[in-house]
Image (cartoon, rainbow, N blue to C red; front, side, top):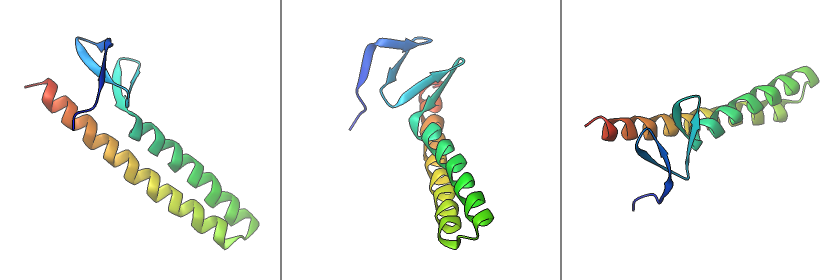
Length: 88
């Protein structure tokens, strides 16, 4: 199934779908941005858990970091596929 694109949103002649964000001339998938935010939040949780001696909070933070890294990787793959399609 193909992602729906809004014909009114075009970047450099390319249709941009709703899961894509344009930042400073770069088209980024929302997964990359959300993944990066989860990594930062996970680092903060892990640091807080470490400072408080709360092993569960520290483990939750580490798990959130891993989840964010995976989501960021998925977004990178999506971006690579889009780039490959556009440069054919």
